[in-house]
Length: 375
Image (cartoon, rainbow, N blue to C red; front, top):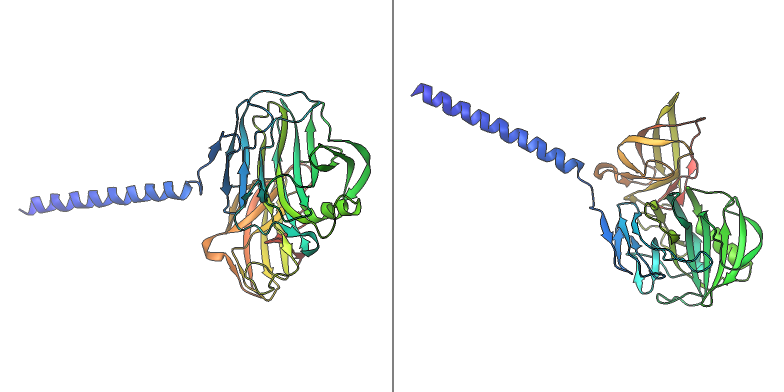
């Protein structure tokens, strides 16, 4: 009897060990599972939402050939782009991600349309992924209209050309150059028969940038192509392909619109913030410890810190926050345990990375869209 009881206890112990092992495996699988499964869209005007705040749209309007985009947690990639159209005409499509309203499709929780004169700033970050075997531009579009319309075509389209590949050019003709957002641009002006178009073309390819959309809106008003009592209706980032285009990607996109009439006590909109950025650097690698302090009078719930990593730097791992994507315009997002920053308090996170060339620190930190000062 004692022997049988001993075997029973041994079996129970083995069974408990197996259950524990299975629980560990299940926990590991759960911990490494993506926050949201990628969604592929092939419908001509199909769309989906990401991060609960932006819309990714396939927007194939210039061809009957198949085009598919796959929405990710932070942006999208073009997974199929069949067919081609003449390079002296309109592109095939405009696969893109946007904040605002496009043909009655409005992104969740958007503040757009908003009157231009009521907007204090509209910080945005973008990171593109390019290919060489296609004809396309990487176009960031800003739409303006005299009315707060959420459908149809707006009066004025601002296009920022981050990159162009192949024998294509903006609508109209070049009318000069300008410095906007601290960068130099070729300026083109024209119309496509339905709306006016003002294009700012980068002299060389840009893969990422953090900037204020209102710099371009004010430059457009100064040229008489919009008025301060008009409305900003949508902010979009994507590609205009003429030939092929598979592999093009918006790695990450963020857009915030801050209006002057907001409640200064509303959670998530700090009046001020400071950031300290402490590094340990060795040849080819570094660690960064970042402390974000809420210098305002309101609580920050669910903070996001956006900044641009200098060229050649790449994040390999992070702690106390997620930092995505791994290069270019990145955003740090908290864990469940450190998502709240009380007035006068701070939260810290860190990451490890690699770099090529000379090491430099990022600048232009923005906490939930608000510019921070360096501590």
